[in-house]
Image (cartoon, rainbow, N blue to C red; front, side):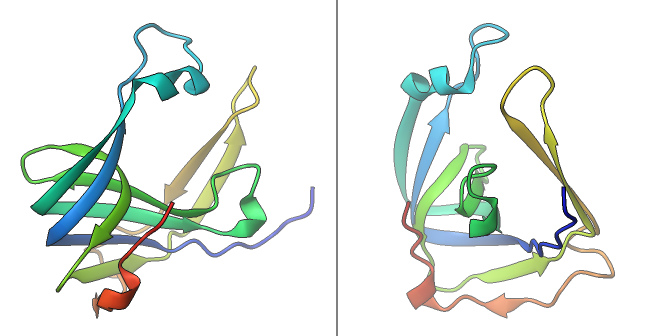
Length: 143
């Protein structure tokens, strides 16, 4: 397999978001239940004016078939609501970004699925990139 360099940039934002759409999938009821079987356990929630953190990573098109292409957001509110971000709006938020120093994509033994492990410097560490303002025109994320 050829060696390919792919730049991943992870990002985090803590803010009071005017609106947030989140999908949550309840975990396995028993070990070994396939991920595809968890779809029936998912639900969407919509929040207005919620203080939370989002952590995300954009997945490039060249990884289609291995990972889901697009922005992958994890959401955690200050009162511990959680899920995958589907869409959001932000009036004034700061984003921290970071380039991990490694990303490993591993095929799980005995299955057709993959694990992705990112590693690197902490967001608040010495190699953390600078803060930047969010352009409100760019904060809508469609799935």
